[in-house]
Image (cartoon, rainbow, N blue to C red; front, side, top):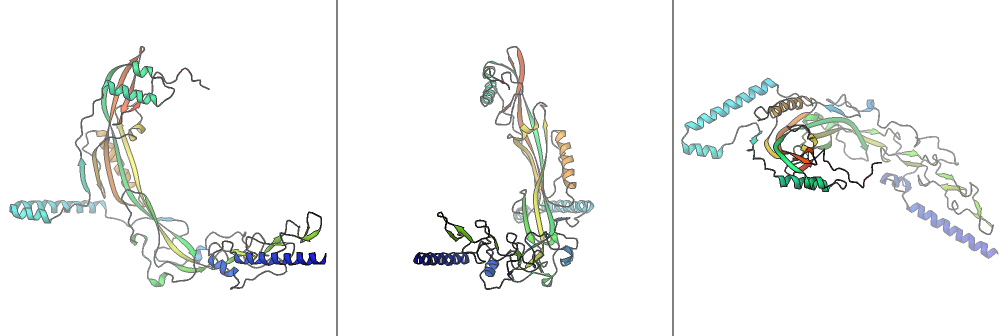
Length: 460
């Protein structure tokens, strides 16, 4: 009996040492700073006597999400910056009068250069043409593509397109498409006008990150540049994109607002004690085996805080957890963040002679581009064959030039697509109707097709 008790005692002590060694080897996923504190190289201020820690910030205490704004440094040009993003308008550009004057001067210069070239000999003119360049404003010249003749649609083409559309609907009957009598076939076209304005928006706000040491690019390194003086270019034109940059010479080191410089918070699970009451033995430290004999509780026997207590797994029995804002360093680096957003803003207008054809269908099919233009600023159309397109272009260009006063316009482009539309009239069983073919794919729109439900279907 005595020998068995000694053997059980030795086995129990071996299990306790093995468990403690295993727990000391784990870091519970803490940050490098927190693992340094848990390793014992830096002393912790641990509560004693199993009482709740009275000092420090609790993990569940209500705390501000950002440091107080009055603690931030005053940076020239950013006095109104807060932790909420604020849009900064671009610097004023040339007025309309100055732009007109500059355009007239460029036209006079190009006219004078043309007269000078006419007076030169042919050989010098050829040399000048080879070495010189155009003096435009950077805009691409308007591209007017010759409008091709609309492809004729025969009766066979119309019927095959209708049969293909009917096949896609399992409950539609094919008899009407096969035996209907096709009458008039009227060909027309729809125009799809589209304008895109590529804008750039810049927003500033205060931001912070953990500071673990190193150099700080603060005001002593020089004055902070204005938001629109910081160079940044988009990857591609007319492609939406966003970049977040740090404004140079605006960084400063502050005490963490969450832990007040402590680097850690009192654990919410154990309230800073480092242990919780064992739920298996209810804090008694003893249990019973299957035979009813009393023995030490298996779940709390290896606890570093005594029997009846389980080591807190959340804080690794230390009573404190890492502070998220400062990552256990106790300091944060505050700086002004610049958010640059490039966006392609699109507006469109569709002119269709067939009022029964929805405009959304015209957008989804291919057509022929009959006019396109791109440049820093584009003028409205005033010479297109359809006056409705000219009117829509004038209105949309004016709206795009005035719609974003707090953003900078980098480029604009416009184009007109011609989409073929064919109206087909038919007769089937003394019933007349019509359907439409649109786009070069010959998509079909038949709102009044006579056989839209088969006999086997029932409407619930």
